[in-house]
Image 1 (cartoon, rainbow, N blue to C red):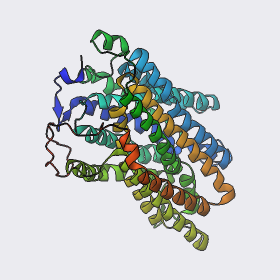
Image 2: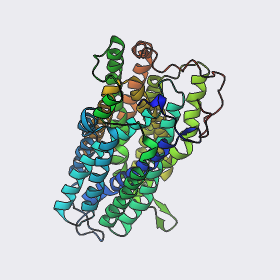
Image 3: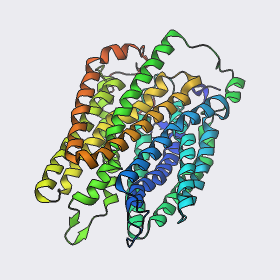
Image 4: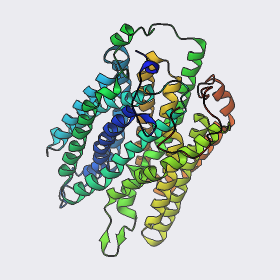
Length: 461
């Protein structure tokens, strides 16, 4: 049964299934980002500390962080293949969620073997869940439905509600009461997400079904790719290069910027020192508060017939995100002169990073569901997250270089590179956009005069 033949109940103008996926992903990201907020700190904190860590050297901890975050996303490729060829997205998300529950539970055990085993299970679990739940969001909408980008932005806000709460709650518990209490709390969040997904299956009928069920429903899943589909696949692979560059810079947040905040930022408010991990909540907070505004800006341009392609958004987002590192260069100069940098530099940097992310990331997810052939939908989403993983690894390598080059040089170098890269994308935008063959064009039934700001309660398309 195709998506278009299913009458779906709606909440705020969007399919109810969107909000099942919203809350599932919210709790999954609560568990992942909660663990991420304290992972590097745990690895390089001394074993003799009041809250003892593993006592690894900073460079080695950043290296492990880079390999781990890369592996988490690279596993999205086999996770996508498993869904496309056998289980379907829905069952693969279920399997990934169960592995994540087990992984976070093991990570809460205070033992070296548990640390290793927990990370492996989380890598496998995210690989199964992450690409397929995102593909399912796109499956809730017909091709050409203007609500699709907005639906992905709502979904993305759910991700960041979880990330915001995680940085404060899990980060605070981990730093103050003990790292493994934080890891355990992250695991509780994952269990809640799994329960939401299991109980919401009736709202996901016809979305993410297995290959066998799709064939039984009359879907032609073995047809060779057309010339248009091949062109669209090509532009998707080109877009993955943008993703690697973007996240290679952005993911300094969990590594180099996290350590920089811990060591070289004045975190005192009166006599109270703000926990380092709490600054990880700035990005999701800004996403929650600014997400609808940024989406509304692009939606208004799109409905007015102005240039608002995903490739443009990604180019602009990369440049804006890079500007955040120019502020970190300012923080480095102040720290060199005064010994510590002010917290306001971080607020400004995370604000620019967030605006750039909102331009590039949720729209990139939607872009894949518009361009990828149905039989490769999860594989291409997996390739997107693999590119994100390679970006994370690049971030770790760049962070490691700060030990020799210095933070000022690294932050300034990132700014210069992203500015040049984003500008080159703008230069070649027209040629790249031609390869999409109108995949982002509005449905003919859309009213182009609906240029009001983005709202959660959009009218039914």
